[in-house]
Amino acid sequence: MPRNRPTLFPATAHQLAALGERLRLARLRRRYSAEAVAVRAGITRVTLARVEKGDAGTSMGAYVAVLRVLGLQSDLDALGKDDELGRKLQDLDLPVGRSAPRHRTGGSPKVPESKEPQTAGPGKGM
Image (cartoon, rainbow, N blue to C red; front, top):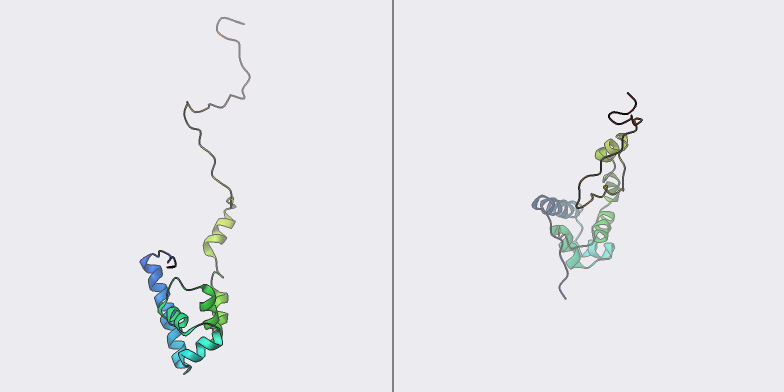
């Protein structure tokens, strides 16, 4: 049964391919064989090849296992560490996780009632 592959934007596919290449180069710099890294990571040689190609269908766990074997697992701590957008949203005190107000369908929009006291109609009280 063929597995589903996630659809990626080209920039994201390029990022994954670049990550895979960096992992391959890190392995080669350490003079580790692909077989040794695969065994130590607890994955197959085929899965390691997919990681090094930046395959989006490969589990995140396989990437993490390879990073651990290469001694690069601390690099994961930097991911999402400085959440600038999240901090700006927090500073603006915007509601998070709330749904947008529902729009009424059909009919005319409801006009809010005035809070001012009602005056007598024309011809009364004058």
